[in-house]
Length: 418
Length: 122
Image (tube, helix red, strand yellow):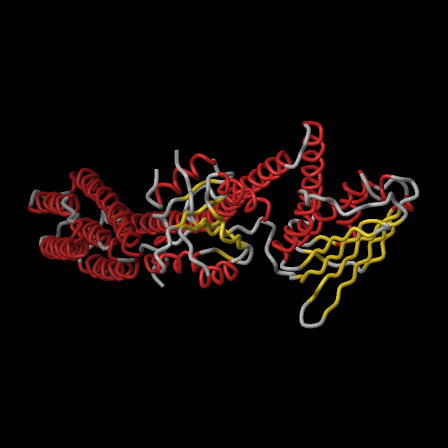
C-alpha cells in the first residue's frame, strides 16, 4: 500500500492525496536544487582538467531547464510535469554523456550521474516505486558510462568521489526526507481524523442533551399551564364558597367561622391529595383528616370501615360532606358534648361497579329537630355530593341525632382533581 | 343595565359550588338556569329535552373536554361562552376559538355584558 493510499481512508481522500503530492513536489524541488549545486561545484572543482568544450554550457543548460520546469509546477498537471522533467533530464544527461565519452571528457560521467539523479528526484512526486526505478536506470547508465571512458591515470579517483558519492548521498537524503515527510503527513492526517471524530461525538452528545432539555422545558411549560388552571379553579371555588357562606350567614362572626372552616377543610384535602401526587386518597385517611379535628376525645368518633381508594374528585365530594357533618355536629350535635358519639361505617361493594356506602350516625347528643330552612351545609352534603359523584347523600334528623347515608359509585379513573 | 329576563341558560360546570354560584348570579339578574350539568352527557340530555337560549361551558370537565357539546350547540344555533382556568384558548380546537371565553373566577359584570351581547340585549 502506497503512503498516499494509507491516508486516503479519511473523510477527504482527494484533499489528502493532493496535499501529499504537493509535499513530495516540494522535496523533489529541494533535491534538484541541491543537484544543481553539486553540478556547479563539480564543474568548478574539475575545471583545471577540463577541456574547453560544450559540457559546461550544456550542464548549465540542464540545471536551468530543471529549475524552470520544477519552479513552474503546474498544480493541475503535476504528474505530467514530472514525466516531462524526467524525460528532459535523462535525454539531456545521456546526450551529454555520449558526447563527453566520445570526446574523452573526464567531467562527463559526473554530469551524467548528477543529471540522472536529478531526473530521479523529479520522479519523487510520482511515488517511491518510480523513484526506485529511476535510481536503477541511473545506476545502470552510470556503470556503463564509467566503464566506457578511458581511465585518466591522474584524476580517475575524482570520478567516484565526484559522481558516485553525490548520487548515493542524494538518494539517501531523498529517501530520508520522503520517509520523514510521509510520517508527518500521515500523523497529521490521523490527528485530524481523531479530532474530527471527537468533535462529531461531542456534537452528538450535545444534540442528545439539547433534546432532553427541550423535553424538560415542554413538561415544565405544561406543568405551569396546569398550575395556572388549577389555581384559577381553586380561586373560583373559594369565591363561590365565600359568596354562598355570606348569603347563609346572619352575622359577620358566623360568616367568618363558616368560611374559615370550609377553606381549612379544602386546604387539608388538597394537602393530602398533593402528598399522594394527585393519585388516590384512602377513605380512612380522609375521614381522619376532616373529622379528626372535631373529635373531643378518642371515644367521640368510632370508625368501622373498609378502606377504599378515592380519586381526587371523589375525595373532595366525600370530604366536603364529612366536613359539613362534623362542623354541624361540633356546633349542635353529638360532637358538642362529652357523651355524644359519632359512628361512621363504610363498606365498598363490588357488583357491576364499585360503590361506596357510608353511614354517619350521631348518638347521645342533644336532641335534634329537622331544621325549618335547609342551609348551605345541607346543600353541600346532599346536592353537591350527588352533583359531583353521581350518587346520593341522604340527611335525616332522627331523635337520637343526625344520620346521613351516602351511596356513590367509585371510579378509579374519575378525573385528576382539576 | 343588562337584564336577563326570561333568558334560559344551561350551565355546564362540574364543580357544584361554582355552578350554584353562577345560578344565583344569573337568577339575580332575571335569568333562569334551566339546568346545571356536571358532564357532557348530562348536558346533552338537557339539550335534547329543554329549550335553551344560551349556554355557559367550563372547558375542562372531569372525563374530557366539551368540544363535542360545543359542536352540538353550534348545530342547534344555541350561542355559548366558555369559562376556563386556562390562560389561553389553545386547549380548544381551532373551530371553537372564535367563541367568547371568560377566565375563572368569572367577573359578574363581564359575564352579564357578554351574555347580553350574545343574545342581543345590552
